[in-house]
Amino acid sequence: MSDNAMTAKGLVNGLLKSSRAFVLGTALIAGSMTMLSTSQAQAEKILRIGNDGEPQSMDPHFISTVQTSRISDDMSLGLLTYGPDGQPVPGAAESWTVSEDGMTYTFKIRDHNWSDGTPVTAQDFIAGWERLLDPALGAEYASLLYIIEGAEEVNTGKDGAKLAAKAIDDHTLEVKLTAPAPYFLAQLTHQTAFAIPRHVVEKYGKDWVKPENIVVNGAYKLVEWVPNVHTKLVKNEEFYDAANVPIDEVIYYTYEDRTAMQNRFRAEELDVARDIASEQISWLRDNLADSLRIAPYAGIYYYAIRTDKEKFQDPNVRKALSLAINREAITDAVLKTGELPAYSFVPPGTGNYTEPAYVSWKDLSYGDKVAEAKKLMEAAGYTAENPLKFTLRYNTSENHKRIAIAVQNMWKQIGVDAELFNTEGKIHYADLKVGDFEVARAGWIADYNDAQNFLFLGEERTGPLNYAAFDNARYNELMLAAENEGDLKKRAELMHSAEAIMMEAQPYIPIYYYVSKQLVSPKIKGWIDNAPDRHLTRWLDIAE
Image 1: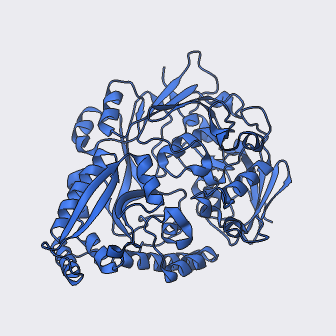
Image 2: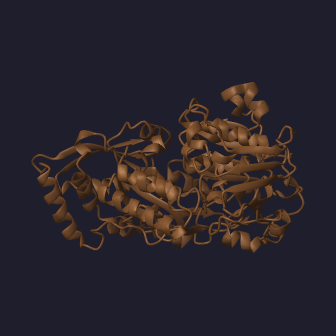
Image 3: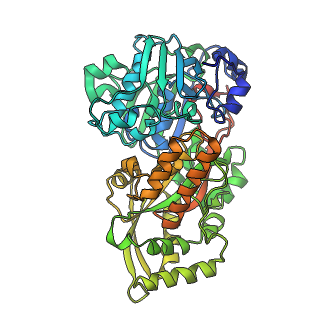
């Protein structure tokens, strides 16, 4: 058992690079929080955020979209949480130690309460994990915890399976992993690792998250959710650091129409707009330069192809569809906001990885790509006279629509007749998870800075988040081997080989690497652009 300690700067800079990070407590990071007010303002401060999608649920075990996790992050405090710069910092755990072999973590839970005054204990975290992994719950994100010993066996219903997590006492939590995991600490910021208020869940069941019942341990608590209109949170006075939370109330307004959201921002009815209409980027740069925030973002925009449907079982057909997409035209002429063309599924620069495994045809000219795509389609029996017909689905957004129209036209030249179909985001993703689509737009933002968090989407055992129903035995084997490999270099090589298989098979067509795009009023203080694009309200303030 090692007892090394890290400074706050060392934690922020080294947490994702080492599986042996240690923290003495929140006092170590106090210096990085001096931008926050230490006293309550006299007038109530209300933050108004335009959220580019409807929340799925207030239950952390049924959340898989960025739009929903923004709200959840304000309400729940994981063992670790996101700091002002988007990097992991101590949360419900004030300190921890890691064994010499990197496989046993012992967390010291800080003295803090649920919003009803009930103490938060180590057992509350175990209860949360056991609930997530319960096969009867059907949580789509359960596989994210498979790095904990026994988690997969519990989730798959194996007789006698037991999670290797125990409460030494109310404030001490011990967790054993299946292998050293350099991303484990960062993963604990994710909603899958949150605690649950056992006393409330047991009393109300699935209704525990209704505004009149919900109990949380984060900086804010839910008081109102009007579907497709807004979600209102107020400061949780039981939060352990409530005295240093400047904003009293935050309202998330649902806007899938980016132009409408921008108009409300321009009218000063919103303080933050969490996306923009890219076709208006020139006007925004000329007129709202002091509010426009564009920054690198750890994510991939892609099209998923349902590989279990007969027309898409031929990998050459999927390859042809990918070859025919002019990614440079989409990023440079359609979006024009700094996105980069994507030829891999893992974005460059992702942690604990090497250069991504790009498609073999990445450097061909677009003309050569189209010519090769035509040959592949003709070999499969598809031409302009006998086109491949299918539906391309996308969720509501001017940007998604413009991209879909552009791709539809690009595909026409190789003998493809794609019909466009649009639904609101909540319905769109629900259909993707049950496989009710042929080809569909999707996006993935890293939950933690590690290549595994992208590549697990191609594993058969991932379940509903493997939208393409991709099932390649060698791919599955390589990803499992990487999970159990403690040597970071060998682990990266295994994942690189797996990504090469995915890029050859093209169940997912990568289109571009994201940038975050939003409007933030100059009166909002403490907003720091960061790759995870995490901006918890507790770290923000509103200028007088």
